Image 1: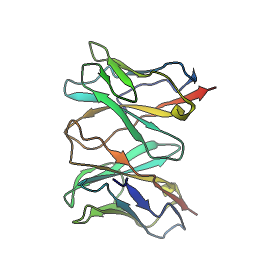
Image 2: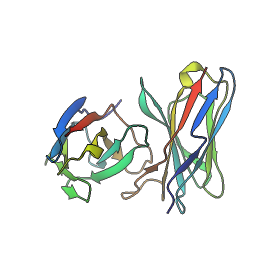
Image 3: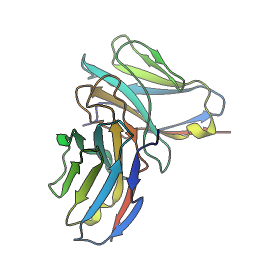
Length: 115
Length: 110
């Protein structure tokens, strides 16, 4: 099976712009989670989607949003970009939501730089 | 707040066993211990998880103390490709999110 894919891999934006990142989960996986990784804060959970519904949300401002489509693909959007949004954005997929053997498989990430 | 405490870094000689400690003194009865690692510039990779029994798979072994307040991840024969940041996570398995701490930077040297 192909792994989790994320596009684009690298992105440069300027402050005030918005950005949309895409994640394609492993075939058959229905849950997609998003994480932000920065040198200062480490890996932080953004949100999780399952069956097109947001099931969990981390402590991020409303500028960060996401959605999931019927084919389980997911997008996250960041509006009004700030310098501090520069980070590696990681997507992870799993077969279901929660569960003992529900390991998460991570994609390579999208490196966002805000100038 | 991270629920785990790990050493910031550790070195290991190639071919030797690497023993990575993790303290999770506030773990509750329904929380599992998970280990992930992140090789530079890649997404985190699942290694192993357990509740209270010791676990072993093709990558590593997980030893959990009887009181479940600490655990040790063992890489039996470290290779240079095991150089990575290793994260110990406690997780209530009803929730999907993983709460990462700072992890341990493991450097395997020839």
